[in-house]
Image 1 (tube, protein in one colour):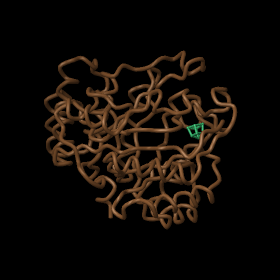
Image 2: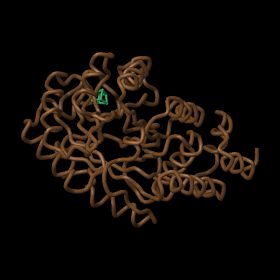
Image 3: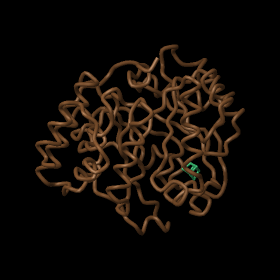
Length: 333
Ligand code: SF4
């Protein structure tokens, strides 16, 4: 199929097959075809979100060596980056959440590593919830959960979660992909919106793998999909595989937008960048505290962006910003 036909199909809102997505991913990232796909994605994202990009912000309740051993993660025990656990207090958690609220984040994310005690997560989250404005959207980024825990997450005042089946889940990670999928189902059935992403993309991933993951992310009507590249953790086995360019990531962000149904209004990328925003990303994250892509204990001193810097990246890319609570998450209810 020619690029004109692919774009026509997109204009008509028709679904794409794996093969068609592979064809779009196969174009060189700097080819005229890729730029046309990015332009189409930008237009769709702007239409779906009324030209209002969103900045969400995540802080971590802990930092700990994690036995799930995802090869790309700085918390993975086998990567040896962090050797002891540190946790923040409920007061610090409240302060971080309130700071993000004050900075204008459209959603506040609470992250933990996979083995953080679930009861403690709930307890601190309830305290955070009590100290935020009622309209502030709270999102959990936590490990896999059975149905009863998913309901407790909802009851603690969360609107949604972030959860993804990562590329090569089960081989690059210690978690079977069926467990990730079961958690997504449990979260959805508990009434939580699920945001997701095609991640973490490295140079070794084939176009077929990426295309299949794009279709999977679109299959459960998430709050948003998108694409994020893998950030190499220095000294790890996976770092030797390298990193895709920002332009290649922008191409994948754009193909994801075209490959996911229009009912999904959000399209994220991480880490935040103007190329991603130009290619149709309408969601970025600011971060503080522990970060699985950073070797610093406090990512605000390392790779983490602020709400303000994310907003500037969007503005520089021709986007306006949503003021107030997330529509990507809120719209699901
Ligand atoms: S990505 Fe999550 S589950 Fe995997 S090692 Fe890191 S903290 Fe553990």
